[in-house]
Image 1 (cartoon, rainbow, N blue to C red):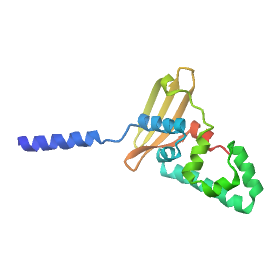
Image 2 (image 1 turned 60 degrees about the horizontal axis):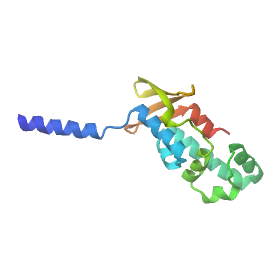
Image 3 (image 1 turned 30 degrees about the vertical axis):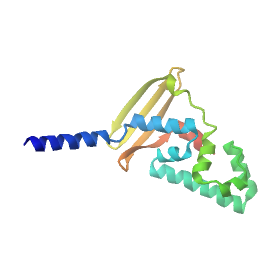
Image 4 (image 1 turned 30 degrees about the horizontal axis):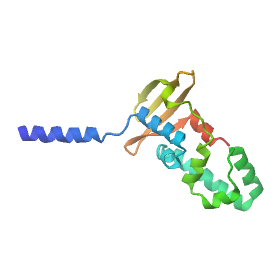
Length: 161
């Protein structure tokens, strides 16, 4: 019986050590990816549906650049980056997202005054507040054994058109 108890305890501890992050941790990872302009980490923090929307939009701009370059250039200017039409051909989706993240300015993570979490089944809502009075809400979904960001006002800034 002691061997069974030791084995079960070891298994539980191993599972606990590899347990996925909380919704707040997932939001912090997303904000870190924005601070670092890390497109790969940013996309990995998003739900599959949201990631597909972003990648589809990028492919749409690439197609537009081939068919109507003037309109595609206007869209790039609206995104407020230094991208050129030729960049769309050479940069990967991850690199393009990294460039888009450069214009997003978040308050310092050191200045966070509070975190609020509410959960309902496979969904979570996280509110991050800063001492400056600024706050941001994030919607998350449990997907592929981890919390993924599914929406936020900060994402609207990144994805605005």
